Amino acid sequence: MIYILSSPFSNFRSVEAACIHLGFSTTTVSPLEVLTIEYGSVLIVPGVGNMQSFSSFITDSILLDVFRDFLISHKIKILSICLGFHFLFSCSYESALSPCLSLFESDVIPIFNPLRPSVGWFSSNSSEIIDTSYFNERLTGYLAQTFYFTHSYGVAYDDKVAKRYNCFYYITDSGSKFLSAIYNSNYIGFQFHPEKSGAAGLSLLQYTLEHLEGTDDFAQAV
Image 1 (spheres, helix red, strand yellow):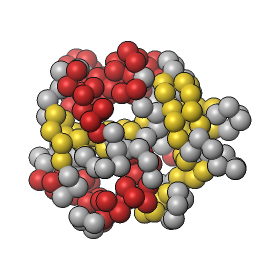
Image 2 (tube, rainbow, N blue to C red):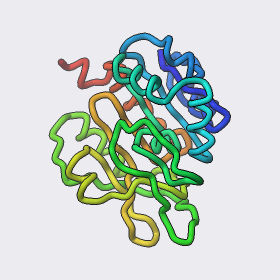
Image 3 (cartoon, rainbow, N blue to C red):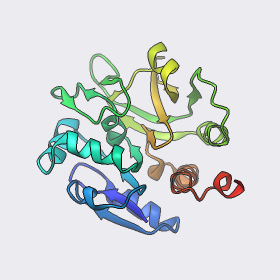
């Protein structure tokens, strides 16, 4: 079962439709209902729009620390997309200083000054960390393809991030580097929209969810 966090500030229906198309069983949950899902479950956190509104939507139902502690203690496997990707980090400078989950330590900042969105199809480059896992090899292959980005805020790719996390970056039309993906054993985040990226996006979404469920080809091999 794939759980999908529903909110007025996400395109969760599009993500849900993509998952169902790929053959996954899904159910949508509110922030409070997240606390009822089973240990080790897979949760998708999609999102579009404004982080302050999204974060407030969560905290109107539950304290952010309680939400975060549950995710960690119950080893919930998370796939986060776009605004949901931002929610994995420490805080966002969009609108006001909005607190996030702090599952990865970095801030979400404006991409351009003056502010404008980064929109288009981009491929990704891997970070300096050499992860020799089969998952990284497969993910690197997928992310060499182009995916659809549309966002005005993001996480800058710098030495601190590159040396600490398994991550990928893309280069904006101004030449700056921003994260396109990040992962560890329990959390995977995509800045872009796999559900809006055609066949390549659906293939990536399927492989990522199978990996989090433990049903991908590597898991079967071992």
